[in-house]
Image 1 (cartoon, rainbow, N blue to C red):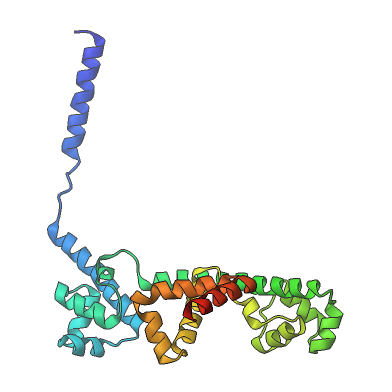
Image 2: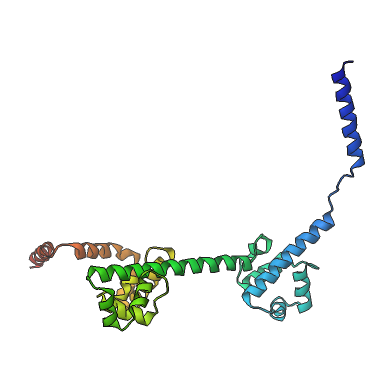
Length: 250
């Protein structure tokens, strides 16, 4: 037997001895259940507080005692799936929230940060549009200030997005640079698309009932598409089509 064999046997013996000395960790089902129950409890409390509901209100909805709901939140007891489904409905959260890994409170902090970033970006965009409209008219800051009675320093801060423009002042500034308020509206992001859709819906519901019924009928899409084509035709071409239709009917 050479030195390498002796060394290998010695190393194997030492590793076996170390394994015997170190106690092996065994899986504890009870501890696992306890941790899972605690996690569900944290998410139940998170959903309840986010919805602004009390222990008593949730207890009445599920026909249990407030103490029982509190036990759920502390992880001392765990609700069943049907009870979680009813809680999800009452607290306005997806039922998967209760076996997720993130709280609504944390999501709310992230959402608030996104909101602040959006507001800062929109202030800069509105200011840039104001400056662009002013410069296109070759209107100086001093001249705009004189027209609107808004100090030059404040208009300059508005144009660089350093401070938000109050709506009543934006109306006056927009009128001075010959722009409609719609010129400053957001229309490219998800928020802008949603706001545009709401405005379109508002205009649609103001149409006479017979026109709304006609437009809402899928069978009339072809007629609407023809009307859209007519609206895009040059005036002389449209007049020619009208004359042709008149000749057919005579």
